[in-house]
Image (cartoon, rainbow, N blue to C red; front, side, top):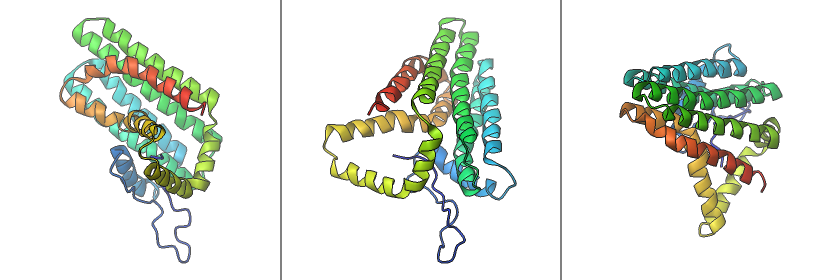
Length: 247
């Protein structure tokens, strides 16, 4: 199942009345919805896909740095910046496809930014909670989660050619999604389909909505909850990726 924003490469051609950016049908992930509205603005600006990715990285790392303070208000501000960064992460793919800027470098750069932000979130959060609480094991939990995120990135680098997948998905996106929906409906009762849905919810969707999870926990001043779950969950992520890519 794809959580990307669809684009209409034939927009403006005779007989095609659809907009260049197609509004997502599903409400979730929310970051994709926000990315859709940002894309409507960014496609009109003289900005490249790689520049959007770079801006996303700067905003995301700035948000992560605010967690180093270990204070409630800085955690909330940092979480809000992460929401913007995640939304921009959807926009760069839209701009790349509409402006014909898809490239191996762009795909690799996007993956790198995803990794560096995911890693920085846990490392900075672990440090901030350590400073606030005084217990150094919070820092170790953050570093363990960051290490798991790094392993996941390495697994992707070794086992997957993201650019080739992106180009293939661009050509087959519509037909693939229809086939997946049909398969999910026809095999609703099978163990494989249930497993695929659980994988989608706890792996793909939870990762896409991670910024909102951080925001909610920060708003209730319990963002430290992410550290023990992240230390375990980050390992589950890369193990899940490794297992899935063997199929």
